[in-house]
Image (cartoon, rainbow, N blue to C red):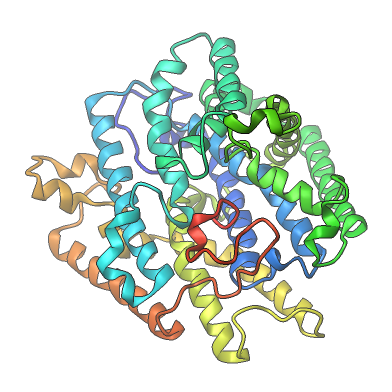
Length: 455
């Protein structure tokens, strides 16, 4: 959770109130959603997802992409409840905007190497790597009080209408990711209007059993579809018909987060252009089917991982360092920054990699990591510099870190980045981003393309 508002405790309002009621469901859901996010990204950093030379990577990535980020948005909407008081607005300012700027500076550095330092500050508005979600969260917090002042059914209807037709408003990579802000907005609004009794209604044994069965059936169906429709690495083969894993992946990957391909000026030459919104609407139906199956099987009681699920902002942003380091270590050990394909040890390596991810997620959300990264995610140093009288009010911990602790955190953060860059020789972190058929290889930065911006 990015901040914990100090407001009157109402049963539906805040995460501490949920814990007080003995309901850890949202912590548990966010832990597993974050685990799925990191698993998917390993297939980008150390896998060969975008070279399409295996059938199972597009299948697994499609399964995760169908529901993981939309359901994260729904959780964020639920945790955004409450009146936007002055104290809460200041928390958003210091606990979201400051980290957003800092992580973008480091992402730009870690992505493109030593030479980028003189141009680091040019890409802050168009966020890099995974910080697009933080960028969207900032804007959702500005929109929610106004949209959700409407009756719940009207608020949800408005959010879906904005989502469906906003794809006609934007070009590729609109400033501050406004396409994703509106594309994912229905899930945020739905989470906001959900009440505690709706969540409690899921806490039934038969619902958990049914949801678990449906969830695994959807997984098997997705992987079977990937296996049956996989046509090899040649992208042109997939353009012969729409019913294949390649097109399904890009549909679920892009329908929530990008403009509709083709400019309005070219609508007359783009067949079916004005019906593109139905693709997004269809995708949202599929997403809710997967997402509700996932939510239905999440335990409601405290689990070993519940505390880590409460702090998913840390592994979400820090995973870039983890994945980059994983790629570097793999390169040092095997001579390649990706796990080889079609070798006898590829399967054991992938199984080991996926088995490590839940523990890596826990480590990045641990108390030690939260203290070590306080300079970025608990920036009370900025409050002190701006002469705020009570920085403790806006701190994640009861007592705000002192300036010495922030200085140590900053040095550690820079040191970790230097180590990762040194291991990689100061080069860009995604070394094997091959042409997937939609991405022009002549462009210099992977962040100029929608498909390579991580989710």
